[in-house]
Image (cartoon, rainbow, N blue to C red; front, side, top):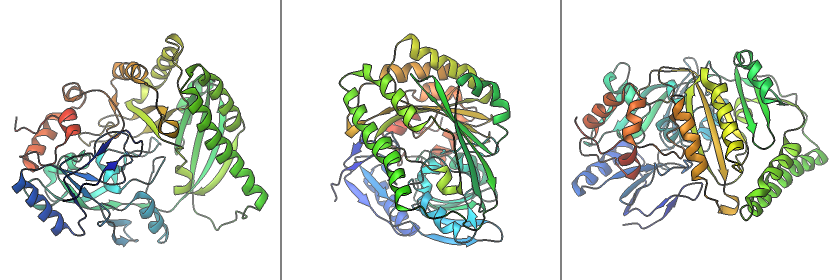
Length: 448
């Protein structure tokens, strides 16, 4: 019996499970589940721990995916890849690149396991591209009865739209078959912009391959990011000399990371410093237009800096402007001292039952509260008021982020909520895959 503690990236949640497992095959996973059934114990899966929530936490049994991290097959001609659940998005992307392939879209970081990203409907930006689970062709899992099953459009298809976004509560995923795409570069243009201009140009901006912007509270400006997909080209980028590398380190690390974190730490003792810090940071980092070109992985991803609390909801895309205006007015009216940025991204609708984008093209709006050197200041009032605004516009919370609603409220947001619960009972009748998160968000599994 192990007594190791597991902590998520933000350091907010930790658990000390009675049993920790490191399976290397689906047969070993089956044995683990069967033993847990006999012990009447609960199991959760721990991947990279990047979720700001407690979704992966359990003090009973924890399955780590570090032994299930093989890329089993890459079919270049058909653009299909078969991967074990513990492969990180970064490692998968690096290996696909060797074959001239890539994932169609990515979020801001790639340290998550592919299983964790799929389970929580991780997303990027671009209205032509859905959440990551939309690329799933087939899933292999061990259900709550200890059975190994495959789920796809052709096999156990009645479970497919539930299992693609499963919140860790329908089984223990061991393998994915994914539809990928030919490698591509991204030509990125970034620029400061007034929020009024962002709103005015939004219909045209959304026609871009990939578009997002950040609203900068207390600066009352926005920073736009527009990316166009290009065919990969031979490397024509000259290696930077030592002075250019030092310049990058000064800008990105000394100013953009270390000094910023130190200033935010000082602000934990005096919140009134935050507006000035935001204005200083915007001047240092977001005042001059930029252009770049590179492979999709390097261009989609960026440094998320240090520990943070994040709350992100998806609303129908047509409410984007109204919601941002209300959040902006909220900050001013209640004199909230909030960190920058507020990130705004756009995602294509889908038919996955618990996808925040189910049935509608969506705008994701994410707010942030940094934890410099691990220290945080209470942001519950700000987060709660933000959630009320997002709820007003038919918002649905990102499953991996910190959010407030419980199952009773969430059930009203998803047309297929009851369908998901029926599948949950079929695949896990004894709630083997439950924890405090699932009990709060989904309630205890029931046949009703």
